[in-house]
Length: 132
Image (cartoon, rainbow, N blue to C red; front, side, top):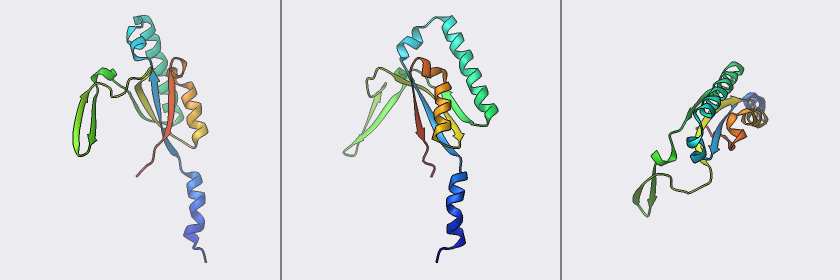
């Protein structure tokens, strides 16, 4: 015999809104070297994008990150902690910022990712959040 609580579970899961991170990757050197006019246009595009997310009720939070050269990487190997200045991996694109969104499903998250200004010059990784 299945309890009424168990029967209600699938419906609650369907109604649950998912949180996703939109991780914005781009060529950091190119972004830092761009003209002031391009920086202004990019900033304006992000302001409009953020406002659209807020109006739609999808925006949870987000931030631009400082350059990867300002990062510190921590790694523990065989019980020994290593602290490295700067990014650990050399890649063509660096993580430059993120948005956390609250949307009904992956399709909605992908639609927001496609609208992100960073999608025109880099890559947007869409990652579901595993809430504890």
